[in-house]
Length: 189
Image (tube, rainbow, N blue to C red; front, side):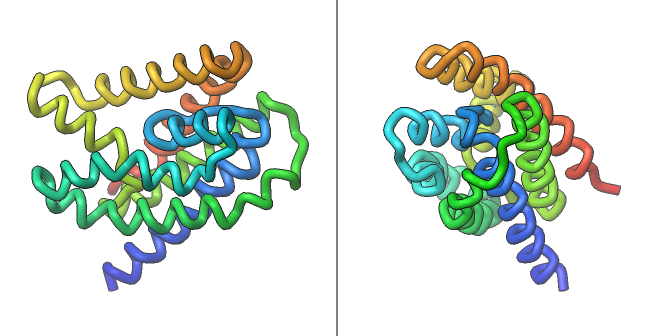
């Protein structure tokens, strides 16, 4: 029964994440943090497929996970693959709404956070920089949350420099919404 619930969590979480990206973030060039944020930057600059870029950028981290954190590898590979495929499948959603960039940042960030939170409740994720942060934390004894915040901040700052100041500001709003929604949903018990 648990594996059915986990499979549903991956599917529902991936759909919510993909709706947040395609319906709200991508149309306004808004970023998320982590590997998804890097993939969005590559999409905005070079029109590369977001889901495919998530997989490509995650490969080195997953290779590292295979050797150092095998349970994490097994728990996250499904989330990575399913969410990446659904992100690219739901690309047509990008043209359905026109609600304004600020609302899109808040709502898109909330959808992304809900998707991530649902997956985290079942000990799975899309992988990415969270694992990288865990590696760094293990070596440095710096809090993993601080490291994730630093990584996400650097990615959003790079995106703001490469794209625009409005991208930077809207992405800060989106990431705040992601964090709030993820924390609210991922809480166990």
